[in-house]
Length: 335
Image 1 (tube, rainbow, N blue to C red):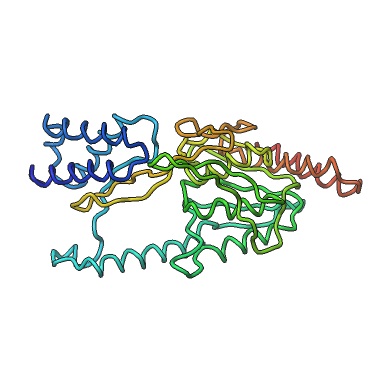
Image 2 (image 1 turned 30 degrees about the vertical axis):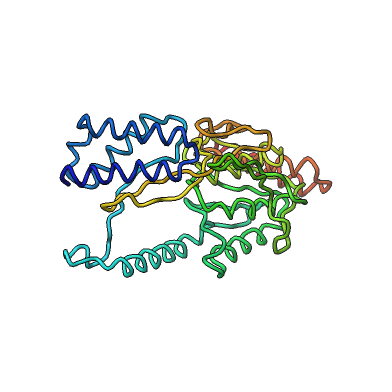
């Protein structure tokens, strides 16, 4: 990349930040800082798009320390035409990316790769790296998979939701999934927009039944990779005392937004919303602190033992209670 190409990308990033970033004053400061760094030659060593993306990402992170979502990356075209040097058809590239997105979603079971019943009638739902949107256009996308998963565990006596690998997801999924874990519409928190306006978020009022409900024992596994949407789920369940959080503190990313092209194959994820819990607090940069702090690798067995202990305490069948106690002891030995 030459100096003119680099300057165009830096200018585009500054303009996109000033147009979309949720904190206008910070966006203006970022734009000034980027231009000052460009004029000082901070990006002159970036001879490729990938190198420039890395330098710009470092620059904005050096200027903003309290927004884990804000980032720049290089996302090159991966079509055969791009590798052969032939002119790129933008419509064909857009279609290819859409097809790849759908394929990835299907291969990842739309964000719910594992659902099973553990001994003792304890349900287990493992959430993948990304929770895909409920709809694509007007057509169901991840919704049938999420409904199937949550209905499968509806009749379990206790439930473990594993968020340790989740790094985010579409904003439509969180209120939908959480509706299966409460008995009535529940306040999730407050969203603040760029213009200063706010909106209260609640769980979806009506979801396909049956649901797990809001009274049975619920445990949520977290780790230091849990981020964004996964943190939102854990935060709501902890703040409402609906679940016990088991594992490690999460990364701390509460803002939400979208990717915007800044030219030359680079794109920036720019948050356009700030999310706060029902009390007005934010987990940005702080994360969700577990109720039971253990290494993420041990969280499953610890939570499973706790679930079995809880069930055993209320089990009036002596023989079945003994079985639950035995399963809990075995789980604790694995920790």
